[in-house]
Length: 159
Image 1 (cartoon, rainbow, N blue to C red):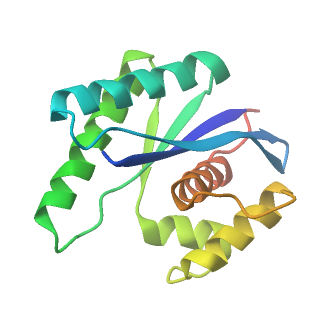
Image 2 (image 1 turned 90 degrees about the vertical axis):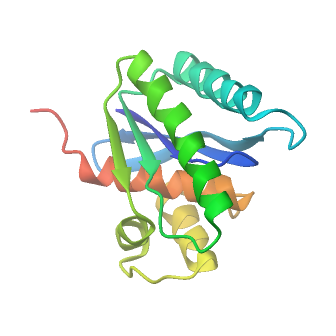
């Protein structure tokens, strides 16, 4: 099974593609794509849509996991992340893919066993779980891989 994890944002969106074979997980692809802050919001959302669509067409995931918006004191940032999430959700739906949403606490619990783990602890566990030679970078990509791990662990193999 192949899953796509997304850590949405208008400035930077992280992605992680993970394959699960039995109980073994491995990273197939991960990274980050951004949009120009000078572009109008509709143009930025279109860029997110196109990038996620390309990932789906390239890797053919069966499921998509997206990090749920957490409370943010910066209202502008919260709105921007919410709009980026909307573009991702729409793209997954357009491709007929089921979407599962996870809060940061759930993702940290799934990856580290501790819901308040620090970012560096999550990155290190992502590296270990996926058998990577080095820490996944940038941070948004590591977060997306963590979402993908959370989804891959949550989904039971088909009988």
